[in-house]
Image (cartoon, rainbow, N blue to C red; front, side):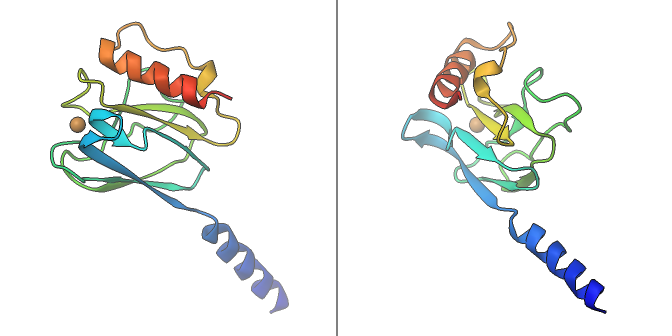
Length: 142
Ligand SMILES: [Cu+2]
């Protein structure tokens, strides 16, 4: 009976550490038009990222080539608030499908070790998306 109690406490405390981070999807934010706020998050595996439909018509999808090996593709429904659970450690580049060419992108680092500075951006990024990703990397590299 004593062993069971200890196991229960360990399980409860590991769940208690998982956090939820909110990202607003906005037509206009502090850094400009068509933007995620914040545009960079560092989270731990098991944490939840909640994409808020703060203004209509946005979503969040993995940018091809900007996700860790073996990570599941992120794809939230257009115009809806949705939760994504971070699992595989590494760097994720995310885009809004309708506003990718306008530079609506963000980055999530999962795990303490993940370094945006080690990211190699694919060649085929839209110009505005590349610009914003480079700014995010400069501001958040380790
Ligand atoms: Cu958008």
